[in-house]
Image (tube, rainbow, N blue to C red; front, side):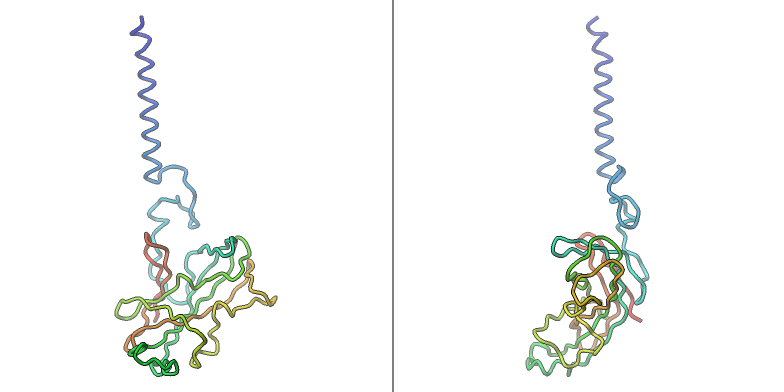
Length: 208
């Protein structure tokens, strides 16, 4: 009698263990009811994490979250153009050895606040860079002061004020931000890039 009573019990324990293992396997593979990504797929799916291909300047990329001062907004980012300077533009910095064989590429990005919280001073250019014609990354140019060769329509992230006169970006607000990057003097910029972190390919917009 004792043996007959323990057999169903063992079967139930075995089934419960199998269900637990199955649930863990599904969670590890992204098959559970995980958090949805902004593209609408499951958070762990390959499709959701794959960077879009064949974007060109003027085409909006995936919506990105940007956080500043503990406020997070979602932004649509659209690189619009690249303006290349000349090596001689750097002469006024009086450091020819440091800037030898380099020039400036000014990258323009249109950013639109499309959701989430209003954000003060969101750094929309933090993950923006470029790829040169040789396949190398552009170097973000951190200037103390400014260059006289800066294009008149190139407004930096810290200088882009809203219509209300403050630096808080609200839903529906659109601004174009421009920042300088250093590239080799004999190179061009073949793509504008947006880093998605270490584990995803950067988003790229072809410069044509």
